[in-house]
Each structure stands twice: as structure tokens, then as C-alpha cells.
Image (cartoon, rainbow, N blue to C red; front, side, top):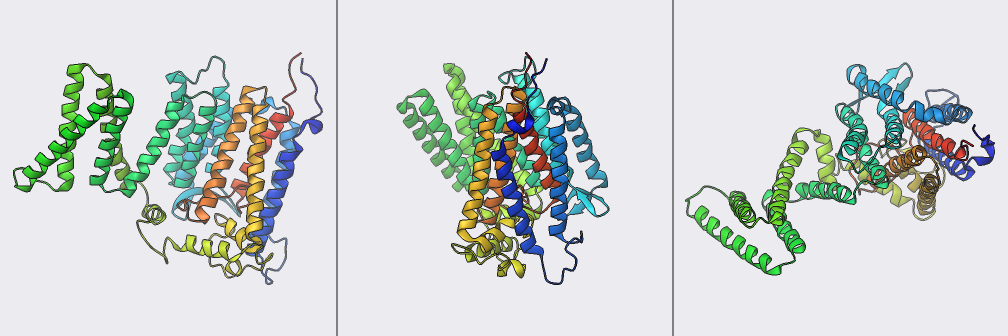
Length: 474
């Protein structure tokens, strides 16, 4: 039998309080951005601040429903919700409406829904259900592949829209797998892949080949612990470079600097493999294979960047990395956002007194760039206070996740933390130029019904699970 618990006495009211502070502060900023004296009726749904309030009221109704049902319902409905969200993602490709180049929306009269937002919630539920299953071990390759498939299948569907920003959110769920026992080397591998992606965009192919070859030599020395081998291999590489360069210079073989690098790399790879096979050295063979895979990955990155990503996405990444300058094009949003945030000074210009906000210098001020309104009108103090609210909520959710008796609840809680943190960190990074503009909202602040409702439901499902953590069989 189940022990009966008074839900109201077990709700984590601190999390609820932080949530209320965030949504009220968010609505004030949406109102400040959109209100004008000529608006007419306050309750007209043509105003964004009125629509945002309507979504807030709807969210409250849904939250009450969440607390009214049994907590086991969320585990039971995890897979059906996941399947339904995948169908919605497939349908949006066919019947969706394109907005800003992405076919991500389903328009139902005055209401626009974004299925990719609901898919985040469904994916967290399905992942928690699977990882908490009987006899599931995250260290087994079969189980890891299924967990990764659950995580990234919706990301692939969203990429078809294409919505690069929403796709990246699913990468954050890798942290959930790591918390549940995924080997640390896999996380290191993923971080290495991300780092290699960046340096591929920053360095020329010639320099990149030299860097990768040097790293391979360094790894070999660290693992093998024989500096003499490093000296010998380095001398051999230097001689090979000299020989190939001289041959290319006198026209015996065609090529430029890049061709020379390839000939050199090919010679080193073949020579190292022969040496590794003859000496039966797994270290040499493994190092060479890692080098070959890394070089192949750099070419796949180049292909994806130039053939899969849209032109405006390429330009945003290039501007962010400093490879291009486009102050009146793709760089315009970020430049105006920085001006707005900086103009707020220490205490801000005051509520509804932001000139950058009122004259709409920053596009998407009430959605993706809502933080620039906070910086301008509330200044450093307001911005810092907002960051403290988010950090406080995230830390509180981690504490709640760690005290769960149910594995499903703990995993789900960490999924919520991972998604909220990614949105929070990347959105703020976008507005101050530390991250390319990929179009993801700031949780609980940005205008948007789909995202607001999804984040609210996502959070309060976890608060509901936490409130029933002491309900157990006796």
C-alpha cells in the first residue's frame, strides 16, 4: 500500500518562488518592450504582453492539473508522449509554416505552436524512463546506443526543418548520461570533438594538419613515456618534410604547401603503421588511427559547414569567431544588443525608459534578445540579480535531484537542469557575443507560448515528482 502524503506540505516552495520571480520579471520586460500609448485595450490578444499573460494563466492551469494526478502517470506516459512528439516533428516538415528560414511552426488560427519545444520535454521523460528501467546498465554498448538514439533522434528530425539552435539543445542531455555512469572518456571524447570542430573553422588546412600531427606525437609520448622516441619521430618527420618539399619545389611531384603536408602525413602514417605492426605496438597503431580519424573528421566538418548549414548560420559563426566582419548585416543584432546592455550602466535607465528598446534598434527584443532589455532598463544590478535567480534555481534543482529515491525522478530532474542550463548559458552568450546567434529563448523570460508552457510543465513535473518522493510501499 502507498503511504498518503499531504502534497502541499512537501512541495519545494523555494523552487516555486524562484519560478514566480522569473516569470513576473519576464512579463514586465515583455511589457516594457511592446507597450505603446496607442495600444488601445490592454486585454487585446494582438498585444504580445497580453498573449504572454494568457500563456502564463494557461500554464498555471496545467500546473494545477500536474499536482492533481498521480506522479506515476509521468513515467507511464513517457514513451507515448515521445512517440507523439516524434510524429509532430515529422508532420511539421509537411504542414509546417516557415519562420525566419526554419519550417518549425504549426499555425492554428491566432496560435502558433512549435513542436520542437514539446519534444524536449518528451525526450527527457523517455530518456528517464529508459535509463531507470530494470537491468539497464549505461556501461553496456547496447544500452548506450539506445540511450543515445532516444536523445538524438528528435535532434535529427529538427535538423530537417532546419532549426540548428533547437538541435544543439539535445547535446546537453549527454550530461545526464554522464551522471548516470557513462564512462568519463566518452565525455572527454565529445569535448575533444567539439574542440576539433572549432579549430577546424579557425585554422587553415595546412596548419591544422601540422597541429594534429603534433598532438598525435605528444599523445604518443605521454602514453609511451619514452621521450627518445618523440625525438626520433620528430627528426624523421622533419627529414620527410624537407625531402617532400624539395621534391615538390623542383617539380618532381605536383603540389603546394597543403599537398606537401598530405604527402608528409601519408608517409608518416604508412611508416608508423609498418613500425607498429612489426613491433606489435598497439600504442603506435592506436595513435595513428586516432590521427587518421581526426583528419577525416576535419573534412566532414568542412563539408557540413559549407553544404549543410545555411548561409546565414555560416555567417553568424564566422562573425562570432572573428573570421568575418559584418557590422550592418549578421553582426548588427549582437552589436546593438551590446550597446543596449552597456548603456544601462550600473542601475539601468529605469522601467520602460530604454531608448534602444523603445526605438527597436535590436530585432527580436522580446524573444531571443530579451536580456538586452534587462541590461538597458535594469542595468548591471538587474542583470546580476537575474543571473543569481537562474543559478539559484538550477542549484536548487540539482539538490532536489540528488535527494530523489526514485531513479526515474533523479534522471528526469537532471534532464530538466541540463536543458534549462543550456538555454540560459547560450542565450546570454548570444546577447553579449560569446556564442553565435542560433535563436533559442531565455527560459521563463522570452516571449513565446510554446517555450513558456514547455519550460513551466517541464519544471513542475519535477517539482511534483519531488513532492511525492516520500510516497512509498509499506
